[in-house]
Length: 260
Image (tube, rainbow, N blue to C red):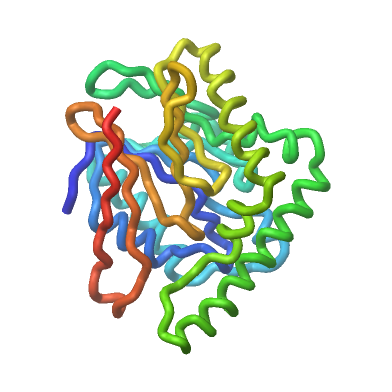
């Protein structure tokens, strides 16, 4: 099992049919942390309002996290826009601390702001009804992924994400992502930090914007990615392989290291 000083994961969307809870379980079994940040949209209340979907694997993810807490991992839960009800229960409960944002100090002394990111998303913040429409459209695209990949499997082809392709190719979406990232960095500068970590966009990213390091954790619907910190303070993006083998065999980790 790999051991990390710190980990950041977000956007599980448990309660949504597209959540890859099984892949996430593999990740949690293969990685341990001194401190683990849950950076929002852990439970998808918006999806649950449309219809109850809670298979055993989704429950297993929650139980695995709580078990890590009992064994000594410090869990910090920062809510997003799909699990915003958590903001009514801020505080510390055993090994779990619920808070709106955090300032993390790396082993090499860098200060990193951690928050979900929806606070700066004008689509969600100012146009609530349109945000729900966008959420519905994304759900439709995710369901289309299953149909597309069924055909690809029959042809012996690798899985492919229609929703990720659309997100990357539609100019307005690409512009929105770029504008969002820059807004996050401007917001982080008010905290006088060296970097910022968020989720929300479902777009795993590590890049420098001006003098600030910008990190996005990705998600556990498509990218299946996490950010981790080594004992020397280096932050890395790692990607968990999709479930391509029987559940009793753990998936391999394909680590993409990014030194900072």
